[in-house]
Image (cartoon, rainbow, N blue to C red; front, side, top):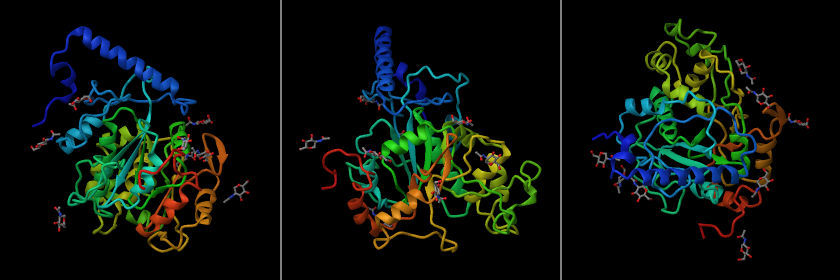
Length: 379
Ligand SMILES: *[C@@H]1O[C@H](CO)[C@@H](O)[C@H](O)[C@H]1NC(C)=O
Ligand SMILES: *[C@@H]1O[C@H](CO)[C@@H](O)[C@H](O)[C@H]1NC(C)=O
Ligand SMILES: *[C@@H]1O[C@H](CO)[C@@H](O)[C@H](O)[C@H]1NC(C)=O
Ligand SMILES: *[C@@H]1O[C@H](CO)[C@@H](O)[C@H](O)[C@H]1NC(C)=O
Ligand SMILES: *[C@@H]1O[C@H](CO)[C@@H](O)[C@H](O)[C@H]1NC(C)=O
Ligand SMILES: *[C@@H]1O[C@H](CO)[C@@H](O)[C@H](O)[C@H]1NC(C)=O
Ligand SMILES: *[C@@H]1O[C@H](CO)[C@@H](O)[C@H](O)[C@H]1NC(C)=O
Ligand SMILES: *[C@@H]1O[C@H](CO)[C@@H](O)[C@H](O)[C@H]1NC(C)=O
């Protein structure tokens, strides 16, 4: 069943050498044009990385896409393919970096119309991946950016290790597209709170990843640490974070390649044990500390309202969606971005209930979240 896809271009129909060369030249020019004509790329980070995968080089798109999202790779093979990273750090300036939006969902995507307006007009600068419950059989409109973006999924239950497996699966699938440079985890209740240009520029030009790591000595933090994880993971290294990360490619490769710490979580981070452990709140933050990963801003770019001090954050329904709410989300903090103090700290927000959509669609233009092009695709 599995085919060695990387060789497809050369084996499919044995193209003559001159046609290979002319195709290559065409794409080199096409890529170069994309890079130089891209207004967002003021300062390209130097650590862009590639991974190997199967690309359709005869596709007329500027950036070649992996052949199919619904591949038949085993989990093992997927992670292995995604773990490739180049050893040459300097990019031959032929790539337009993309932001990968990773949706970890149960089923429907009630906020899809809002996202579609956000994405509109920015083709080639983003990719969408959806990991629903495997039993989900709903459909999505053909003209939606989410159409055809479902990846092979498995069950992901809150608190259990399969939640982390699902996150790694999403990251790995997105890594197969070597243009993806930033990776943001989102749920069906998340929305963007700035327009695409702002978010893309912010992330692509950032030299940090955004994982809200902190040390929590309480029972809800250190109390979940199983000493059997030592010496690889010590109590001091045991950290906590919100699940909703935003990471760069170098860190994404590290996470899917982890063969040291992840197996310990599989064995010792379990809900029903002496140290009841919620894997999605601990794996990535603890991993970052364990590998001494320096380029983390230690904050999240996804806003969550915990002011009610309950075990679940506030949800926003139709009665809560106002311009004031967006002011609160957008300007509730000061933070550092590439060494500069800024008020733009949250790029996304949760949790928005399905009944908030109508109002959000009305406010989208006022909030400048939607692209300023003519006409909605939702009439
Ligand atoms: C590659 O792209 C071309 C042009 O879009 C298309 O005709 C062809 O079917 C694609 N090949 C694969 C394997 O997807
Ligand atoms: C995956 O396997 C199924 C059944 O074996 C097959 O029908 C399908 O075409 C395969 N898909 C890809 C993308 O190879
Ligand atoms: C989708 O799944 C639901 C619940 O499992 C089931 O009742 C329904 O028949 C399924 N629909 C289709 C089109 O398969
Ligand atoms: C993030 O936290 C780690 C561990 O506490 C620390 O070493 C690092 O300096 C922090 N990074 C920033 C940007 O504050
Ligand atoms: C952020 O900084 C500005 C200017 O220094 C200040 O007026 C504002 O109160 C600060 N906001 C928060 C939430 O700390
Ligand atoms: C990130 O960029 C800022 C501004 O250029 C710089 O001060 C800082 O040292 C950089 N951090 C890293 C980890 O490269
Ligand atoms: C995008 O948002 C920024 C503020 O974040 C605004 O200055 C800019 O005009 C907006 N662009 C569009 C096309 O709406
Ligand atoms: C939007 O439509 C109006 C009238 O149809 C047209 O004059 C204008 O140029 C259009 N603007 C854009 C950005 O396409």
